Image (cartoon, rainbow, N blue to C red):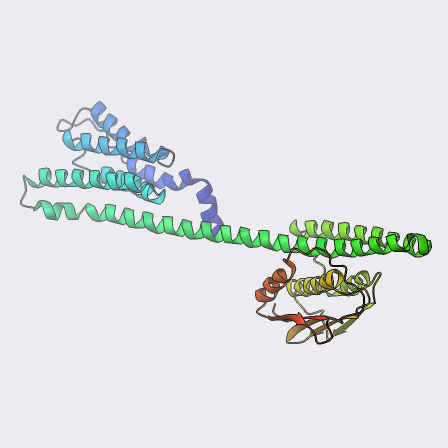
Length: 366
C-alpha cells in the first residue's frame, strides 16, 4: 500500500482520472429545446474541466478560470440543472491552493466560491419555498471539507519533509563521525611514527626503516578502511567489528608501550550496529591516547559483553612528553552521540596517576 501511494504521488494525473471521468460522463452537452445552444454548453464545460490538469503548475490561474466559467454557467443558466460538477471543480482548485500553501489565493478563491454559492442559492430559491440559507447548506460543506482536507494533507507532507530532513542530517552526522574516527586515528599513528623515524634516522637506521614501513602499512590500512567505509555506504561491505579490535590495538602500539587488550564474554551475538559502535569507541579512546599521552604511558583496553557492553580505555600518566597533536574536539562528542544512540552511559576524566580514563556502556540490543 505504501509503495502504491508513493507511485501515485509520482504520477498524480493517474489519481485524477476518476475525477475527470465524473466530469465527462454522462455527457452534459445535449441538444434540448429548453437548454442553451450546445456550443455554449461545451464552452462552459470546457472552462470548468479542461484547466484542472494544470492546477498544480498554475493553481492561481486555474482557480480564476474555473470560477469565471462557473460564474458564466450561473449567469447564463447553463448548468443550473446539474451544478454539482461546478461545485466539485471549485472544491478541487480550493483544495489544491491550500495544499500548495497559496494562502492568499485560497482565501480569495474561498470568497469567490461563497459569493457564487450565495448568488445561486438566492436565484434558485426565488421561485421555490426553500430558504436561500437552506439551499446554501447543501454546497458550503463541500468547500469547507476541501479546505480542511487540504490543510491535513499539507500538514502531513510538512511532517514527512521534516522527517526526511532529520534523517538526512543524522546520516550526514553519522558519515562525519565515521570519517573522523577513521582519519583521526590513522593520521595520529602516522604522525607519531614519522616523528620516531626522524629521531632514529641517524641513530638507528634499521629501526627508522621499520618505522617508515609501519607508516606505509598504517596508510594502506587507512585507505582500506576508507574504501570499506565507502562500501558500507553503498551497502556492499561490512562494518569493522569486534574481530578487528586486536588489529586496532596492535596498530596503536607501534612506537609506544604495547596496548593491553582484554575481551570478556562472547561478542558474536552482538548486533552489527552495536559491534560497530563498540569498535569506534575503542578507536576514539586509543586515538586520544596517541594524541595526548606520553609515549611510555601504559594503555589497557577492556571490552566486556553481557546484558550490556562495557568499554574501558585507560592510560597511565607516563614520564615522557606527550606529542600534543592537534585535536578537533569532535572525538569525545562523537563518542557521546554513539553512547546515546544505544541508551548507555559515558564517563571520562583524568586518573589519580595523571592518566586518563574513558568508560562507556552500551545496551546490547538487536
